[in-house]
Image (cartoon, rainbow over all chains, first blue to last red; front, side):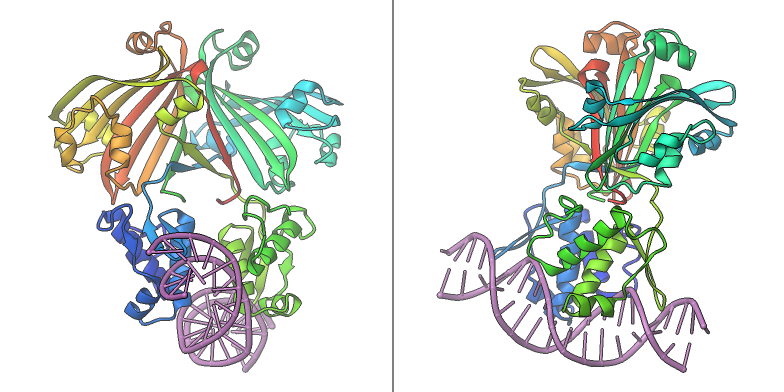
Length: 244
Length: 244
DNA sequence: TAGTGGTCTAGACCACGAG
DNA sequence: TCGTGGTCTAGACCACTAG
């Protein structure tokens, strides 16, 4: 039962049942960290199945981080892992509409330029090239909800050069067009400077949550975006399980 | 090569090379969303291997969310997924030491009590029971780094009742003892109140990053902890891939 | 050196679901 | 109906490493 949900019902398949049995032992504490799990051939006897079937279960457990496998020694329950969270990051429109408020998007500024040193630092871009710099507002009802500052690497996404982003926010536009292979978030608290304070209609120095995201596609930097939220308007929530 | 890192070097194993080849096709856009991937038996001919080997690669791609598999129809490239982030959250000691600063822990307060209504709300606890309330400081050098406010559900972790937490911080103590099966984070920016301002040696009203974490073990609430960081002292960083 | 996990094979049967 | 993926088998060889 303990893995229900993590594994979609240990249901029909045998390797899932093996996986489920073992992870229950681990999560319940019956098998403490360091405990040696039965060898593959032992489990294949115990479950009356081939070693491949056991291997499939144990490989998944290893990939999930619950156990560690060592040749010649066996498989061992790992110490509780450094925590890994699965953080869902929704489209801001959906976020606003979930609050029951009307969503409005506004493009504040758009500049096409050759990347400055600062742009290249944000994008982790090695060489100079054209970028698109955008500034956008996201509103919930009449109130500013989030302020967006974005750079798009036009070398990676040349078709963005022709987009005005007046009607469509760059986030959804990119998501529907560029498959991303890797991303990085930086989340921090800052005091609002005058520019942000004006954009969010709050006082200078008021606390804000900043979420920065860098995205890569096949190792090419695609975009850097900084969302700034007034403190009271936004909480990031992440619900997760060990080693997803 | 585009998957280098996702798969630790498509290196030796054939199923990893198959996986790597296909994901490169997808991430590069050569195979657009909706594109039908060759059948398992076709790939097994193409790579001159057994269907099991192909199946292993395609199963991983499906689990990673890059493709969708339908019986009788084949396997298809999925549309870009909703974003999911893996957020690593380290032990504060490790975080501080990574900055090259000496770490110091200090227990500020400890109260054992019957859970109040507020405690039960924080722990998402249905019934009243004993809890341990802790307040702790984490220092980097001489400077306060983070302030910790924690509740431990003594019904779930009775042995914590006898711990003073003077030498050991509750985080590492719990992690080494209670396997967690689920957790929830809430991350937000706040203005420091007087209590926090004094604890972190900052001014009242200064922006702070608050990370709250609730943890469950086998569906029993274990602990609720709130870490407060002065804005300039802390950034959460999360690097991740689609559908982890 | 011997035993473990890592990988792969060449089959097999079944469930599902599109036609 | 019948081709697809889902699962499993009973072997095999190899790489790594603890003793």
